[in-house]
Image 1: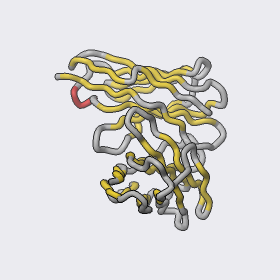
Image 2: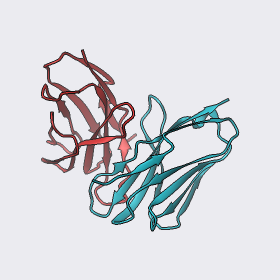
Image 3: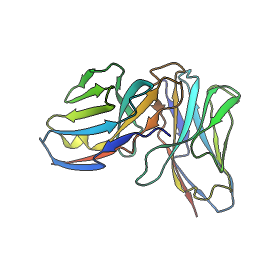
Length: 113
Length: 112
């Protein structure tokens, strides 16, 4: 079955450490996205990529980095520069030309301790 | 910055009640409006994609309407059941091939 896989489901990190969240899809989708959700807030876009080896900043990219070396994979690194990293992170993918309904992963909950 | 508003923020209804919620979005550069259902501990799943003004979509007891000229969509649930409890997200897709912009969602709780 085609789908999108995020790992791990839960992640604990010490302050000052970088951590990488995995997102893999086997849907042959060109576009991939990272969103963050905080309590009482909607999904906010961190980064997105529409083609391999290219990506664009979203609304809240500061303190995050991404890479898109393969079409299937779009890992997100939460760096120590991210001031409030504790959140729920959701990855999604879609076709490039619309309507571009997303397929979502199941999310990673990151807690900084 | 595009603004997508959903109301109410949360809703508690009794089993069997019918309910509806609203999504407001920019009326310019419209391409599509998406509705998702997001149950706790699961991935958001697509409910409807709506593209035409006046469009009406239905899936079981859930239906949605679209008004692109005034920039709103309604989601209706007829005869709510406890399994309808979830957060309902709408997302605006513009014609510029940029990522979807999501509302904050409406959290529905159906009490048996």
